[in-house]
Each structure stands twice: as C-alpha cells, then as structure tokens.
Picture: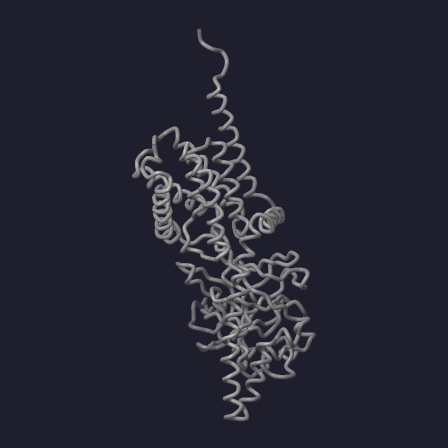
Length: 309
Length: 159
C-alpha cells in the first residue's frame, strides 16, 4: 500500500529548496537596499569579521613606509647638504620643497596625513580605505591629495567612521572636478573616461570654449568653483585634443599628476585652505589667493613651483 | 569520512587565506579566488540550502568593499552555491576532468553573474572581464583545486 506521508528524503529536499529560495531572495533584497543601509552592513562587516585582515595590511604598509622613509630621508639629507654647499639659491629651493613635503606640520589643522589601503576584492576598484576618520576631523567630501614627492588630486572622501574612512579616486565613474588651466584662462570640467582596460582609464578636460586652445603640457588645476575642491590643486597635464564639437566646445586628454596605483600616503584636506592663507602651497606664489583669480579667472599666474614636485 | 573531515578543516582555511592574500597583503590579481573555490568544494558536500547560505555569507563578505555594486557578489555566490549543490544530483563527479571543469565553470559563472549584476559603472568591457580575465581566473582556480586534491587523497577523494 502506498504511503501517504512524506519520506524523510523528500522533506529534507523540500526544506533545502525553501532555504535556497530564501537566500536567493535575500541576495536580491540586499542588491536593492537603500545605499545608507548597504553602507551600514558593509561597515559592520569591515569592523568585525574583516578587521583582522585590514589590520594586517595597515601594519605592513606602516612597516614598508618606515623602511622607505629611512632611505629617502638619508638621500634627501645628502642632497640638501650638497646643494647648500654648492649654491646659495638652492637653500631657498630646498626650504620650499621641505615646506611642501611637511604640509601637515605647517598646518596641522588643515591637513591630515593618512595611509591608503586598497582592498583588492572584486568590485572595490576606484576606492580606498584611509586610516583616519571622524575623530581626526575628516568629513565626507574632503579632498584627498598625494603627499610624497608631488602634490596632486587623488580623489575625495565618501564615507567616514571613527578611525577610518572610505574614499573614491579619480578613476571612479562619478568623479568630476571643476578645473582650469594653470594660468586661469580656460575653465572646464575634469571627468573620468574608462579605457578598454582599467589600466587605460584617463582623465578628460571637457567643456572648454572652442576658441581657447591648450598646448600639450599645460597643467590643469582645480578652479575652486562650486566650493568642492580648493582652487589650485594640480589634476593633470594636457596630452592632446580629444574631441571638439561644432565650434562650441573642446575636450582634452589629461595625463594625471597622480596615478591611482602609486598612491600609498595621502593628505586629507580637513580645514579651510583659503581662510588659513595657505593658497600659495597650491598656486605657487606668496600672497596669491583664490579671490585674486576673480570671477573671470583670467589673471595670469606664475607656473606652480614644484608643487607639484 | 576522511574527505569530509578534511573539507571541514580546509574550507575555513581557504576562506581565511583568501582574505589574508587579498585584504591582508593587498594582492589583487596574483592571488586566486579561494573564496569561490571553498564555496564550490563545500557545495558538493552539502544541500542546496546550505550551499545558498554559504554563498550568501561569502558574497556579503566580499561586498563589504564593493562601493560600486553592493550585493552583486552576494547574489553571484548564492547562485553558484545553489548550482554547485545541484550538481550533486546531476553528476557523479568522480573524474578529474569533471572536477576541473566544475571548478573552472563555477568560477566563470560567478564572474559572469557579477558582471551582469554590477552594472555599467562597475564593470569592464566583456572581452576583458569575462573572456580574458575571467577565463584565466577560472583556469587558475581549477588548477589550485586540483592541487588541493593531493592532501584529500588524490583521485580517490572524488569517489
């Protein structure tokens, strides 16, 4: 006689199917959760289960940095001693470079030094972790600059927690920056353009007037318009004309000042660079301020001195 | 029995090793996707429900750093966990050739689902992401999986 009850195997199979469907539905729900909730879940995982692995990379980065600093500082010391002994003008130049490289000591309330960690997991391209957070004065939207050797725009802080924060670099699809040529004559927008391979991602200086030409090698800096980035931060150098539209606008390919893969130590702009009187750090001339550019931005300026590096 | 005991030990080790290599040491492409390998090995030993749950949890861990496409890894790994467990009912799977293609195919399907779900802003061109990188990564995972058979008892571990 046939059994009217479900066999244990059938029951187990049905339970498995239900559980599988539940997890599948849950994964769909997670995909469409509000961004704020997603961030909370991600942050919870980062500070709990994944924290030991992040601490490992932080420790390794710090150890590597200490090893590099010793060699670099010794080389700098030797170079400075030779330059001072050789020519007097080099004293002023080395002081200038030293000031640029010691930005945090000079303006501790404006710049916050940080180390960069790249997660290296799928889907985490264009983002990085910083070992500074809200308790160091970092806020969402703070610009992130490269510190070692040359000042340039890396990206912007997106999420902040105590002791840690997440940033997006210029290779992120949503990156935009109001920019201008170094002499303040040509204004436009810098945006990211995806290459065939991620290594070919480039920056595009778009929306420039058709009748304004830019020579290859022209330095493009942030314009300060919109109040998002302080004015004068180097972004990239013009490489070639990318496109032009009907005698209306032109766009240029830029070679970025900072290659995202080389970033290891950065400065987060946590203070008001303009009001702190530190604009000459970016613009390269003492006493120069963002106001002196005016609304037309056409006041000529001297080229940046090593401020880029 | 010996294989199950070894797998219960091996799978957590693979998960820890995956995050140690990718997060701890910051190795991106040089390190294999041991998380997917662990899921595929576990899925052959457990039911669909457990496979889906493991995949969901593993995917969520990877999504902790996925600003551009949160949830894509969770969905991809959940589906791979379900399909991997389903192969138990469809294939005996006692040959090295099946094992190789199971691991390679599972890894490639995971990358395919992630590529589809991630959206245009978070993914590269299909030629690069799936055909070139995806195929190489799939073969890489399959080779690592074959090497892991040695401590599990070699070909006998598949029976």
